[in-house]
Length: 428
Image (cartoon, rainbow, N blue to C red; front, side, top):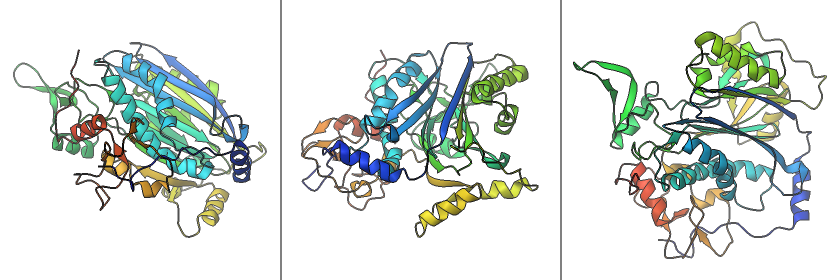
């Protein structure tokens, strides 16, 4: 149970002038320009997207601006995709501690993304609708790109030198062995569709429900072991920028990541998105809803000449991502930026909330007088909160009384996702 030593939310008011001053100090380097384009072709009317380029960490301070791009590929109707488009961003922002400078804000973002995804799923399921959706959610803040995903909509980075890499993980049961093992360990069954005579056809699916994905938002009729906890990856681009291709599986079922990137090189983002959709339709035809967003992160000095791709592509691929060094992070960052290498800041894909929400110590000292649920942000009395680590074999904490804390509903959902109890939500 929560105690006086437990989780407190950092919502103390900070003077606006102090926040703006802090932001200006953090913005020593010029920000890149963000250009984007979007194209789509509809087959079922279940693909939706979100583009918002006027977000601000500090309201009224243009130097704190960041952009959001997202693709939602619905199934069994479009209700979950529409709901996620309308509410997911707000739920992520509400989970962010207040009064943070840019670096602390970026460090807190992965945890807020997890809370926002789970809250969106919980609220949508409470409506009693059986629709579900993938979600690939991208935040671009200067040179830093943070991507969260559930399902099989993908975000691809086309970096300097022509190296193409996925910033997302596909949560398809057919291709992801770890997810198959997690679903079966949580109480689900994985198998193909059986037809008359016992023959099995089609991709691997989760039963009951027959969903091909292991993670999504919604899908309350399938089972809570289909979780909304996203894979999150955060990278810092070099000062030559790069291109992001964010698209639904209508693109990726037709084009490999490398082919999609190559098909649109040398053209502006708006034309590039159209070109990727055109190439996907030429390859496979309109079999599914097809949506593509292309985002170019462009250096402020357009005179920077891109180095030609190296003769041995495999060496560049091996060097594309390097983990951030704790010892000399700033020096390493400058060196990586100088040679055009992308710096990996964070990556985590565990489906367990105890691992993803961490501990309050990892988020710094808290001083607010109110306890709140780490997922749905409702206020809790000191005797109401249940530690996310209590009774969990997946917890990294040796103190089960340690925050963050969950309300009773969110704790029940956590237990259901881990297969400890059936979901209490019933389909209308």
